[in-house]
Amino acid sequence: MLEETILLPAHLIYPLFLVEGKIKADEIKSLPGIFRLNLDDISKEIEECLKVGVSTFVIFPVVAEKHKDKKATYSYSPKNFYLNAIRVLKKRFPQVILMSDVAMDPYSSDGHDGLVVNGEINNDLTLPILGRMAVAQAEAGIDIIGPSDMMDGRIGFIRNELDKQKFTDVSIMSYTAKYASAYYGPFRDALDSAPKSGDKKTYQMNPANKYEALREAVLDEQEGADMLMVKPALCYLDVIHLLKENSTLPIAAYNVSGEFAMLKAASANGWLNYEQAMPEQLLSIKRAGADIILTYFAKDFGRLFKKLNS
Ligand code: PBG
Image (cartoon, rainbow, N blue to C red):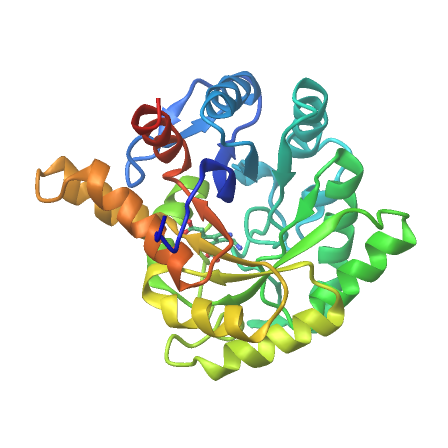
């Protein structure tokens, strides 16, 4: 009766990695239990998740090197396997909510989220590329557009492009406070998307900064974001709390790949009890103020929740 924080499978978003064609499922070494999946395998994974109450998914494409170029043109190409898979998934599972990732890195030969011009990221020349990518994703049936690129002004730009194309009811979850973090390592292994040179510190945030997150939040609100996200989650619980206290928008937190990998590794060694530590991690993120959590634990949490409540 007095429990203050309630965590349900419905609060979770499960990240999935999609490969082209019929390639067999292959486990990501640094993300034990998480696989690169083809369309049919992803469909099976979604079915299993639905049985345990997880019905929102963020889908990331594993893009072959041959499709990558400087301007990430494949990201909005009619031949893009990811966009075509989204169309199929929306038909197969009309009840699921699908979220995308908007950033150039999976499609960019430079491995950066923005356009590299003379060795630097050009913020303003990146915006039209992100806009085209977002509209292509909305056309394919994505419900929540997830700009993770951290360019300035992209939320307003993308909102405007979506509205012009009559996608007024497609929402935007902004990666509002995304830090330049070492904890994205396993994700970059999964997509082979690490920057070819330099780092992401000119556009992702400095881990030392908290109030800058508030400035980012104000801008994203003004530009039309529907939800604000903090990423990573565990090292940034204070930032989650700060945004929750200062915005009426729903707050999401991304419990990132490195956070998942740490707990998986410790549990595999018998150093931590997975079924106890995993819900504690998620609960702490919720208690800090996250309404929604993107997490690789989603399916396991759903299963555990079902086991404990049946
Ligand atoms: C790409 C993107 C990243 C993640 C989500 N979208 C990596 C990065 O910015 O380099 C990381 C997710 C994770 O680590 O789980 N824009």
